[in-house]
Image (cartoon, rainbow, N blue to C red; front, side, top):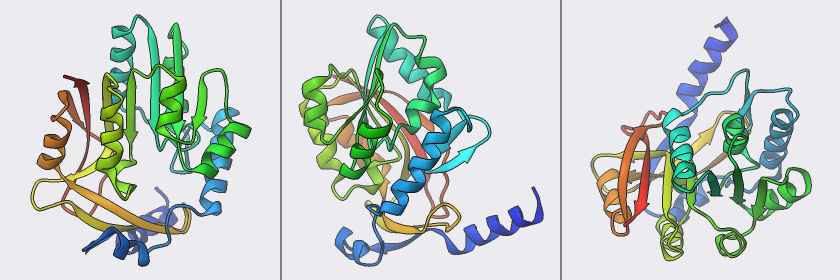
Length: 256
């Protein structure tokens, strides 16, 4: 790593990341910018276009990489669900941006007999997705209800998104109500002790300038919630890290 790269990492560690312990989501919102900025969409769009067009290998949160960083437990889950459904994979990717996870795993997905990747996102992301990125396999929807109505979903995916929702358990309840067979949680922060904690995540300026509320879930309480309707098949450590005592983890569940 060159000197400028070292300096950037030090500055990122000192001035960015997760901080605070807020009483309410509304209080954290008042101290942050939010995730709805058009500038964020523009950066994500430009990065995703490069991945789609083959001039970059991989994109995560608008950051481009020279090679794909695979999460093999994540990939194993996709293949497991497809195998259980005779080669069919129909994913509801809640908060899936413009297709980050889709493009990340497309090399493997394209060999399936029948697969569809359905993203439910914020309205301005869906509008851009429908205009610029939708294909025979990649689709965009404004709501879970719209997606479920049109697609025979066999896997609900929440990758790096539940922690940014004001009411994450309400969204999980909606998925529970639709009796989707499998749920995959990935890139989600958990702590062993204490109640669910509300922080603010400040994003480094070299990615994009933004800050927004973020949950750190109590792991056991989260598992208890999930296991009210689903049984865990396995859990795994995810790629992300935070200075707050916690682990980013993934969980794969099957409907009881």
